[in-house]
Image 1 (tube, rainbow, N blue to C red):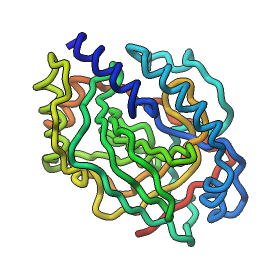
Image 2 (image 1 turned 120 degrees about the vertical axis):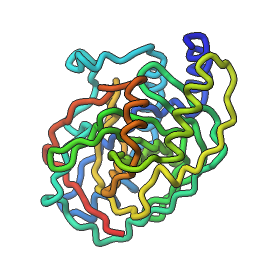
Image 3 (image 1 turned 180 degrees about the horizontal axis):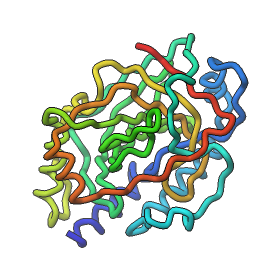
Image 4 (image 1 turned 90 degrees about the horizontal axis):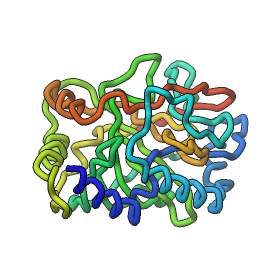
Length: 276
């Protein structure tokens, strides 16, 4: 599997994998809740986002991340780090249109075991509050990186997007124990079946099964969750989890368990709540 991983990592670095890690936004937030989303639209710098992409590409070439010694990770940014604990009672209602329209491709480019997560290279679009983003990839953490009222989930999935002007946006989905998930199982089966392969498997996936039907979310501005932890990403954390079976959680944990960054201080940032 090592040779296959090496080959696939090269493909991933040349393509969508440049965005691994997800997270951040470095501009100042205004004190009004609704204005933070608008500030993200108007103030995010393409140059900063490009820097984040380049730095993440370099980080992606590392074989492993030492999650046991996160205090030794390279740190280049300030006080807007991810993940965070979301206090539901403190979230401010979003009164502007924050609707999500997601259209992801069913034909997967590749499923890659990159050394610190399972990454699915995919295409498609997300329209967030009327703004368009291209999907680059999605990947998994166990247990969840974000917490809600201090509680974590068995798995968290990150859909990583980039806008034409360089802005980054991540949609995070929690997985909880419940019924078996067909799309999640297809990913697990693909990883197992192609451990020794050196070419993409051509997996077809109903990505909608990895998303909640109700797309209410929490929004804040944060950072990448892997080195160099650059700040300049919009986070959209789904309020409703998706079910996977206990067996599926255990199967993923055979590959990765404990690949989650520790929760970071919220500081002066606001968390908005969008209700669909």
